[in-house]
Amino acid sequence: MAKRLLIDRNAPWTGIDGLFLSKAMAQMLNAPQGGRLLVQRVVGLSPADFAGIRGGSVPVVMGGEKVTLGGDVILEVAGVKFTSSQNLSKLMEVFQSGEKLQKPISITFLREGKLWRPQ
Image (cartoon, rainbow, N blue to C red; front, side):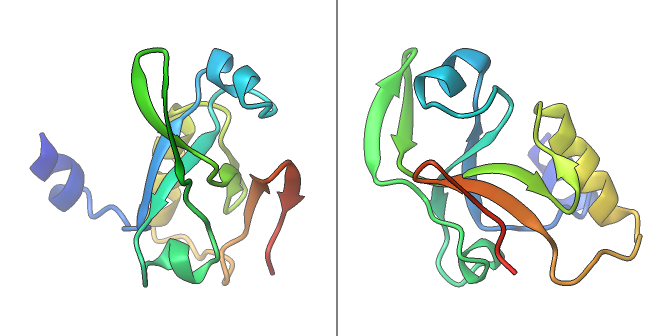
């Protein structure tokens, strides 16, 4: 399974360890809705690090799951809104299709309650 997902699909590496927020988790974190991607950790010198994405620093347990809070909440990447985990598959299809992507790739996220759209 892992080989199929990581090698055979040729998925791009972002350097993000994230968690899709359920509707209940999003409400607890004051995020606009469920399905958003909470960034828990960012690998140094990764594409996400160069884009300025920040991971969290506050470990908690939510709904029996260990979560690191305080990181950015990604709302949209390359025009694909993160409204459900299925949209991650849609985003991977866009990256793998060979379609020309706007460079740099657009991203919208929440940081400390404010909307960010880095240029």
